[in-house]
Length: 640
Image (cartoon, rainbow, N blue to C red; front, side, top):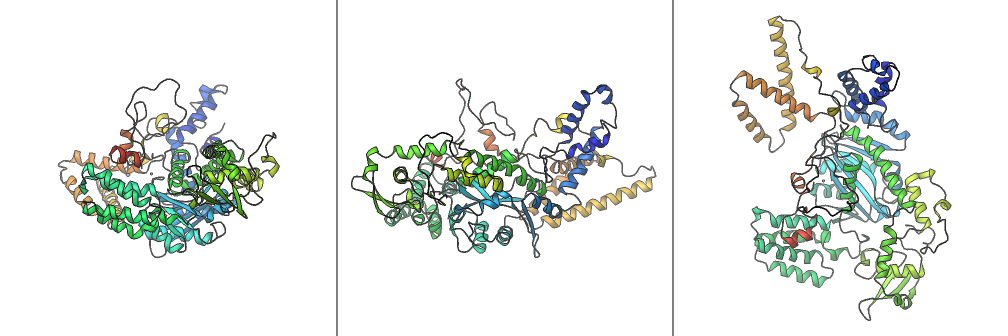
């Protein structure tokens, strides 16, 4: 085995595509090489051959060269590297487009994998679209904004947008790039009916400017969470006994579904004695169309009043795709989205297409169990795809079910959610219900085409093997937020840290004049870098305070030894920020609530079936539930 084969080893990534980024760490590559040598004849002797088994620092150098070649960084612009790799992505069906602003430093990157492109043509993309952002996925802290639609297989993104700023201009550059690249990405329409977001003013302003015809709704969970955090903040001086009363009054406004209930709830809140909170809610009522339930009655939200789909998808990105480890830069992050995330969605959609998820059947059965068996005989068809269903709890009350639209006149079905009345009509009459939980053969075939595209098997492949009684089929074409240690295979565990090449002396001559000149040149270079950082940070409002604090700390250095130690500390801190494999950190409050036995760092917390034996008594974490926190009168925890 020649050393050339070992040089190629770091390129043998865990994903064999041409755009793969999850390549072997240098420590993993050395372990694999040594294990191969040990099984050969005279393997123990071969371990001492530097041409076959290079030193750790040599492998690390090769890895750094490969990383710079694959991802850019340093003297290589990552965006230029993305533009260079765009044809490789296009050959795999993934669209990667880069946009740079001429008037500012804003840039944006659009990633649309084959599944995302096929999801853009779904009918559900016309109704409601979920948008959320996160900025802790790579070492450069670029923002990842996900644009998602709700399918029978869960939330599926139609695009992933990466941009360097969370300002209105940054969001506008990202959204405009999506609009220019895919003008009909919302079910072959220019814009969806509804955008569901959190209360980010810059994001909402950019959405309004890019797609002005779409309606904007706020996530009920984030709205309630923001109010409860305001009430529990010490600076607002809200008495502990008064918090729950004010929160209850606010929730009565938010969940009011009639004009009379809204007027009564508003009057009750205005009668409260806490003037500051009353003024806060009155100002928020100027945007009541975005968060009060009354104004969602005629909007096809399909029962989605929160942005939980987006929150869960971001957790998948951090936990499963990135394994709680920050990507090296935006190029590595794009590769993870284009390769790892695409395979994850393909696997998840196929589980639903292959009928391996029982959730659909259980939801359908639970809805039917809420209606008496005799209620089906009382259903009257009063028009084409229009049925009258008697109420199961109120005598003499009848609800109208619109099968073709998937709506009902009851409180649950007004927004297009699938209710028990629709379930009863679906069981007895079948027909078109675009939001019905049970998946027919056509539904599973559509999911298969979403996951596999042209390679999807024919419809007959998704038909049941046995002739047991099946649920009624739909009509044709009716289908509808800090990091810790790396993994145990980290190179930091495999080998002791090697001295960096930058520690080598710059000048080897002992001439004092040349040494003095070399020190002066190095200082001038350092000063130019500091001025570059100064120019990049001078617009930060806290920059002056940081400079003053740093100056005070430097003024306390009184001797040469302390000065050298401080410079070494600065250098180590700067090198640590740029190292490969930074972990996505976890909030200290989340760590404090972890039960005994779990890691106190940022490793991924294992999830699965609990042990059969009784668990030891331990303090429970505070639930991620606003209603529970309000009931217990405790502040909400910050999970990200």
